[in-house]
Structure formats: structure tokens, C-alpha cells
Length: 134
Image (cartoon, rainbow, N blue to C red):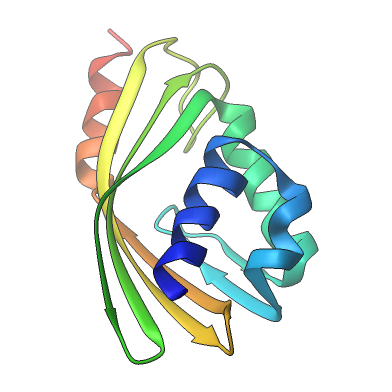
């Protein structure tokens, strides 16, 4: 069940950009720390973060590479990708495809995700943003 909720987190909320499923997947006291430096609390705070990423990167996708579950935690290895259409991380749009690796630790309360802590390859992402500017 926990791995399925993580799949729904990426496939339904992020890839399908369906924020209506947030209450089905996330616990009401949900906390989030993203690799881009933002923190979000609750459904509305997280929905704003999802909007920010989708606003900057069109065709944004999260590709699950691996899921590992133990107790009330799931670890995900993922690839994030999207087309840089609007300002992102302080960089003007390049209109190029971006892709970077990340991992996330999901903590559960009952059958819902209560916390996510993400680490991404920001150095690799930043180098794409700088290279693509030229």
C-alpha cells in the first residue's frame, strides 16, 4: 500500500497534474521539503509548490527508477524532467529539456504520506540551466 501511495504521488499528483487526489494520498498534516529549497505544509502549501514547478517546466514528469520500503518509510530514486518554459531557479527560460536525478524519503502516518524530504542533483540541474543559456 505504501509503495502504491508513492506511485500515486508521482503519477497522479505530479505527472497527471491532478491536485484533486492530494487528500487521498497525503495526510492532513503533510510536510514537504523539496530539493529546490522550498518547504510546504498542508494541502494548500503543497499544491502551490506543484503549481510553481509546473508553471516553470512544461511537460514536467517524475520517472520512478526504484522504490524501497521499510516500516513506515519508502525511499524513491527518481528522474525529474521538463521543458524550461518560464523563470526557474532564477534563470530565464531556455525552452530546452531539463533532466535531473533525485531521491526522496517518504514517511507515512497510517496509509497516507505525512512527510517527504527530497534531495536532487541541483549541481547537474544548474549546469543545464547555465549551458542552455548560451
